[in-house]
Amino acid sequence: MASLCLSLHQTLNTNPLAALRGRPLSLSFPGSSTVSIRPSGRRATAVTTRASYTPTPATERVISIASYALPFFNSLQYGRFLFAQYPRLGLLFEPIFPILNLYRSVPYASFVAFFGLYLGVVRNTSLSRYVRFNAMQAVTLDVLLAVPVLLTRILDPGQGGGFGMKAMMWGHTGVFVFSSMCFVYGVVSCLLGKTPYIPFVADAAGRQL
Image (cartoon, rainbow, N blue to C red; front, side):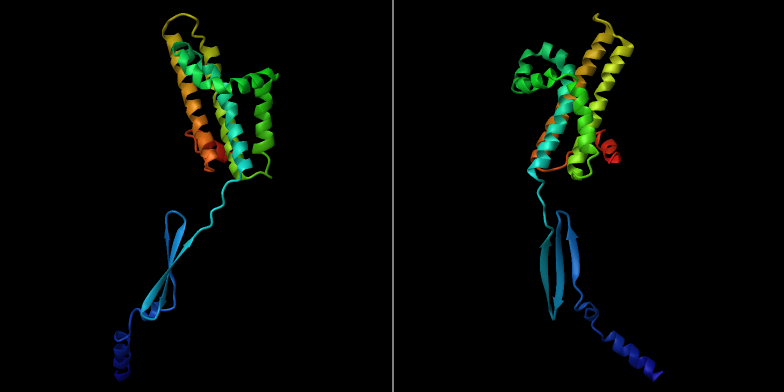
């Protein structure tokens, strides 16, 4: 009994922080920074460590930007109703007309570019995942752009001014606006070295890698 009381007395008098001495504590914060607290006697020293950041190479950014040009060029056909209603809007796209004319002058350019992008970039495991993911997003978006054309041919709204024609005009305009926003978003993100995640497209593209 005496030994038990003595052991209990020593336990209660023990400093609870003594067990933590010599054991560094690490705290992680959002933004790739880590703070390590190292107890030393009565003082604790805080050491901040930042994770190394590797910028995206310029070649990978250029390839990614070029990938998003494929669905954008193929979506310009959906903007004809918008350009007819607002002719001045076409002035924003005049700088790319020489590139667009060169692209359309090549026979089966869209077909060749699609398979070249898919087989040469997406399936090329020697390239980084950053490039392959952006290329797969562009390929997926280009496939989705073919859906409105198929629906137009199946439903055949005609050339009149009925509801079917108006629905087709609204649909084509919406597709063009969405594709243009995706193009701008992808280009700006790639210029900054970041990975763009396009709604309804990113998940499907990620599953293919």
